Length: 258
Image 1 (cartoon, helix red, strand yellow):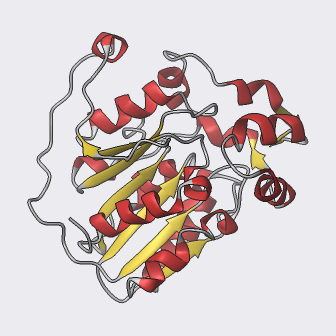
Image 2 (cartoon, helix red, strand yellow):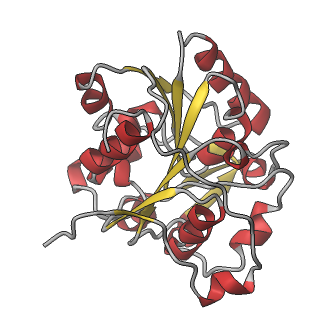
């Protein structure tokens, strides 16, 4: 039986304590009501990865935009998200999955953005060497399946289905593999100039069964930003396998749910 997710502040473990302390940032008592949602996909994916979440947000009366992230450079991806954000007509919740959290941390300082939602996502500090931070935690099995060709990376079919999309119905996982978008190998080492979570209220969905980003790294990131946090019995693609829970988290950030 799946455990019912609960919103909580996740306590730091022993490994987290080794990484040093950080200042807590108070969350607002009531989230600012937002009418727009902008979704940022991660590496080795495209905007269709949000297909299970989008109708749930639309049913709540929200305007939803899924960015088609080019995954070429951080600057290109940031520019694409900023163009989408510029088209929004008011308060907006910015949401990201996986590597997309790098873009979220950079773009989230925009005045239109009222809240940040990280879904099993990176959440770098400004100018942080995120690769070095990640190496403090055991690598996920998916790394063995990463292939590089002409400066771009993809995940082998076996590793994609077994580890990247673990917990996703196989027929859906095969579709996601078919639309997999190559990510520039240089992308993962690029650094942000800002970290929006220092100044914006944040929410985080930890995937307890993640084989791509270590779940303890996700917990560390959520704790560091003092995020309202939910833990899910899910692999890396919780937005596909647990769309209701992810939509509920986004709705909470938009002031639509308690």
